[in-house]
Length: 479
Image (tube, rainbow, N blue to C red; front, side, top):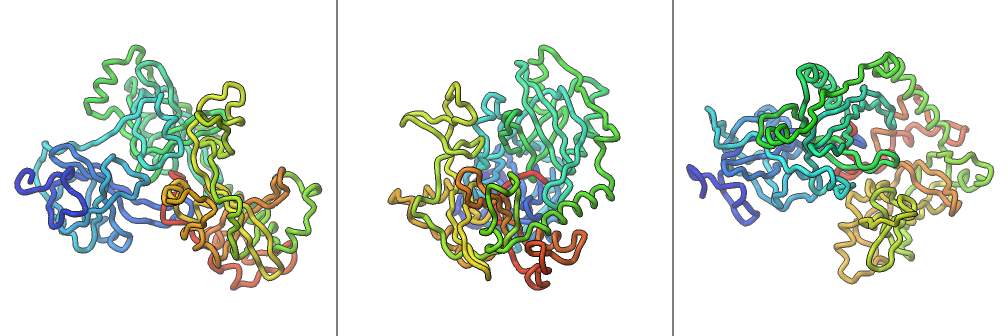
């Protein structure tokens, strides 16, 4: 038992019941699915007197009550919570257990200054190790560096949302640089604050709770997610040590917003969304219409929308593959090492292979049936579980066995955006529209969706449920 009868976070586990802890809320954020905006709950990072950390989760049902009760930075005594094994995704600390706070949890304020509990907890990653975190969302990434350049905020259209993006570069004390991308309000807040800070001299920034993504031509970028925070010139030992080791302090280059780069006006935004929705509405096809297309006459990369039900998952050739964690393509190997012929065909540098989905789905509508290939992240959105997790569940090593998480898709109806694959000449899924996407499509510029350029899609069909994405976050930070 810890100080004053409180149990240290490091001692908590699912077998310990009726514990009471004294913790500071270091970070507090609303977690959501960036693909459809669905709120998944209220999450926080807790720190105790020993400096131990644990992530806590509040279910959406209890979010409103506790959101008004909990304040970032304050210290509380908590009891009546449940401890379980962590979700294993989008964690902000290494604790393998997680606290679940609900209606039964007692939250008592602790007044006064509690200096014994740190305000922050970070697990910094060296720039040279950032690439090893690519697409690995089990533990989010913390980085620290001197800000050397900040580019203007850009606004881009992603599906039906305008997303604000701020890209910047940070440098470690050895001179190695790392690209960082911030999204949404975090991008706006950072840009406004760095403009003021850079007038005072060099700036050391901490970015916490970040994801890592690889982009061709840019390499691995540290990207913001819903738990992400940034701190400028934070008074912590790591920042002081960083400043002491800076050989060439640099004042950040902050590029000003130009008229062309300024966020789009509401009319421009609505025009962009309206244009996209018109293009999408005109691309609706039935299965019969898709099957009648000549793949050699259709323009390359043309995409079509099709609403169909999954009636079978053909796993005769397996449902997963070992692929490159950068480009998702199949990876080559000699038994001992793996490499990607697309990302590095010359040097054949060793790559970390990742399990990706490869679903051969048979779908049908009122006009016929056909096969759709659903790969990687599009399949993960439907299933809600990473392919690696399902591979680990298979005890007999038979990837032809269909796990329940995949077979549960049979009978579900979805709106698929598909294109013709250049190599197989079959149809590949590029995007699975969810309920919100369909509703926006229905109301953006027109109240009707047309099928194949012909008669309007019936009103009840246009609003019918396309399967929502999993409650697990599948792509982070774009909100």
